[in-house]
Image (cartoon, rainbow, N blue to C red; front, top):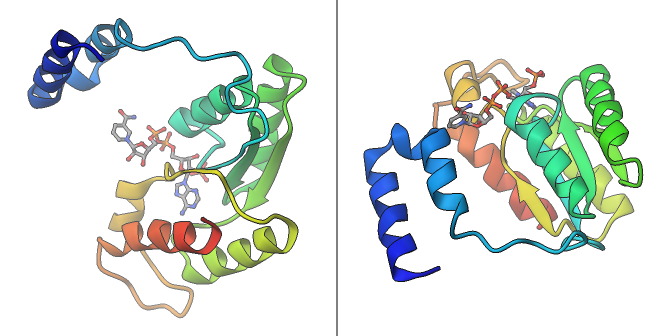
Length: 163
Ligand SMILES: NC(=O)c1ccc[n+]([C@@H]2O[C@H](COP(=O)([O-])OP(=O)(O)OC[C@H]3O[C@@H](n4cnc5c(N)ncnc54)[C@H](OP(=O)(O)O)[C@@H]3O)[C@@H](O)[C@H]2O)c1
């Protein structure tokens, strides 16, 4: 990244709202290097909350670059619908739907154990699933309600287990 691009990136960061809008994207993309079509071939990627929104778009982007992608979702039916949609755009992609409710420590543990029984580790983990919304209505399976910052700890725990 050139010095000018770094300065513009910092300015966009400080302005917050425009910096994270389409304006910020268009400004920053000018300094991005193009990636090879198969830049992530042989890599295994996990995206939490991949059945909609930014998570689904991220999963599709990783698949486009050749990664094997696990759509880590709490609702398998919606996850399958997302997988089919991504597969239509990238028929060669290796896509899996895995169930995990990242607001539940039990679910995170069960998912990590199941994943590690089949795979050595993940190369890429995208913590996308409703990080802010989970914090507002966070409940353990034993009924205790955890503090907001616990939502981040679930993601960190997942990373520690499969990384
Ligand atoms: N959009 C923005 O402008 C923006 C800006 C800054 C940060 N973010 C962050 O980026 C992330 C994605 O944003 P988005 O706009 O794409 O949100 P979204 O459309 O609400 O997508 C959230 C995804 O997370 C899943 N999810 C929610 N709780 C979950 C749980 N406990 N376990 C597993 N999956 C869960 C949802 O699945 P269900 O279908 O099962 O609900 C959904 O697929 C969020 O963390 C958000 O805070 C977004």
